[in-house]
Length: 203
Picture 1: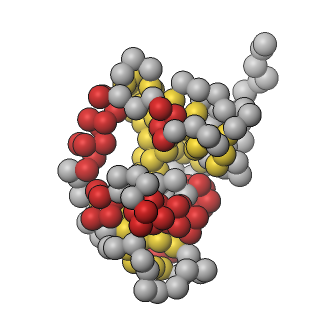
Picture 2 (picture 1 turned 90 degrees about the vertical axis):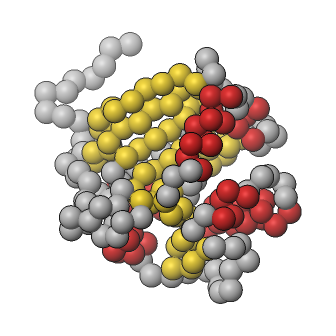
Picture 3 (picture 1 turned 180 degrees about the vertical axis):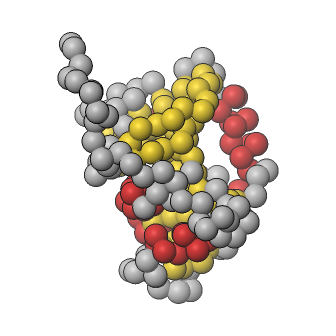
């Protein structure tokens, strides 16, 4: 069982932050952003988040997607553009186009372990491969997901949990936003397999 590593007594917290369809896709081809289901309570959550001090962590693919949104104006990226960001990549080169982004080509796990010894909280956005590596290393303190009430069996993209180990989520908060979105927060604990005495479920 792997808990979280507080980085040698550091103060920083790392949160993995996802939005997903009910079947675990991060996006879906042809669907609008947020599956067209954002509402006042969800946007208020984003507004409150925008007032908090944290550094955003990104993988290469997510960086390229969001940097393109910022360049073209296809999405409102003003808050993310202004926020400090770190992209972990061995294929990108400096100077980076997206403002306030630092490139780290070193091992992401070791770099994040060092960052957690600081005082600035850390959050991922998208970046499933990066999130998986940080989770397996025991570096994730908090997991937050907003589940949208849609199944994307035909059009889903970016499967978020593929390759994850088994994880027990120690729930800390469950809320319903706008009468349809489920906000779930937990402390993730990586386990070696089913708990002792666990049997097969019944259908």
